Length: 225
Image (cartoon, rainbow, N blue to C red; front, top):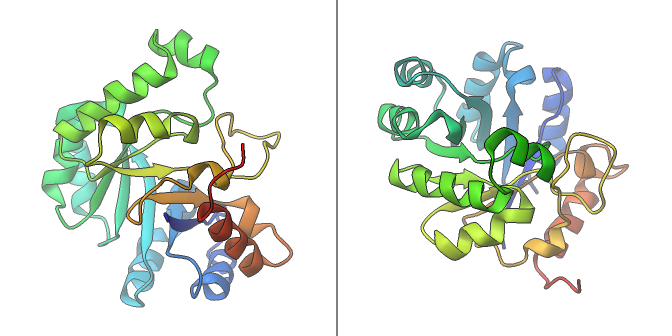
């Protein structure tokens, strides 16, 4: 069964801390995105790391290799860090070689992109694009890839050595940015090293702890669909 990462979808560290304190016994790790990191994030993340909290730093770096290397050099010792796979092999290698202590994840396709938008931008179908970028990430020695749940099974088929991170996991589609979300029950096949990222399904629940446990239960059984 995959690890469960709780997305801290807030720019307030007070709110983030409240969620971490409440869920730290149940969650495997917590995702810190750019809005939160820009708000005194370095100091807060360093403090959390010292406290033994596992952090997934979701900065989605995308720049020339030397700039990415310099940026990564100054980051806290987090567990995972995202870069955009479309930055190319040398850019991914700049991140992995500069900080071998951090598991670098290459983002293949944003869950906000529809099939039509993916074809318009990349001139490829989503599945073909994700497989192509995953191959490059593997060659660049990334620890894993961030893949929409709709394409994740194909990546595991071709790249068994890569860790798989599935973002935007939820029971039903909401009217928001996640166009390629899947329910947790469809991800039962993920390994113990893989990760599912869940945000509002947990953080906006009346009982976040119960909601997280429900996610785990769904991940542990085969989907009926």
